[in-house]
Image 1 (spheres, rainbow, N blue to C red):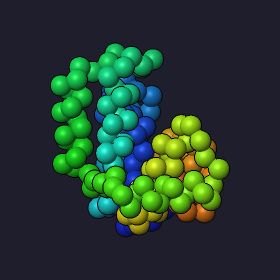
Image 2: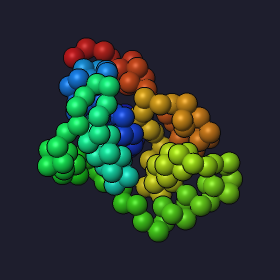
Image 3: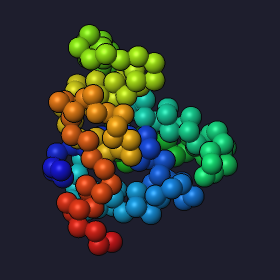
Image 4: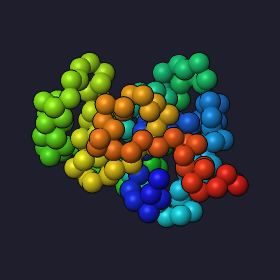
Length: 157
C-alpha cells in the first residue's frame, strides 16, 4: 500500500464507516482515520455517491432505510471531505476502452466505471470489501482491503 498515493473509496467503505449498525463499522472507521492521519488523498466519485444513496435509502439486513434528507446530508458531507472525481466524457471513453479489452457485462459495468474513473484521475489504489469484483482489473490497479491498511499503518487506534 502506498499511503501517500491517492486511494479511491468503494461505496461499501463509505456505507460501513457511516452506518453504525453496518458489519465492520468500527474497522471501517479505524481504517479511514488511519488514512486521514497519514494525509492519504482519499477519492470518491459521483457514481459512488449515487450508489451510497441507493444503499442507505432501502432496507438492509443491518439497517432501516435513512430518510432522503439525512441521506442527502451525508452525500453533501462526503463531497466536502473527500476529493471528487467527476464522471465526464474522458471517463466514458476510458470505460468503452476497457470494455473492448476486458469482457464485461451487466453489473460489472459499474465496477468498470470505477476503474475508468480511477484511470482518468491516475488513482492506482482501491479500498473495497469486494476484492473479487475487481480481480479482472488487477493489471491496472491495486486492490486494498481493510486488513492491508491496518497492517501497513499499524492496528493501534
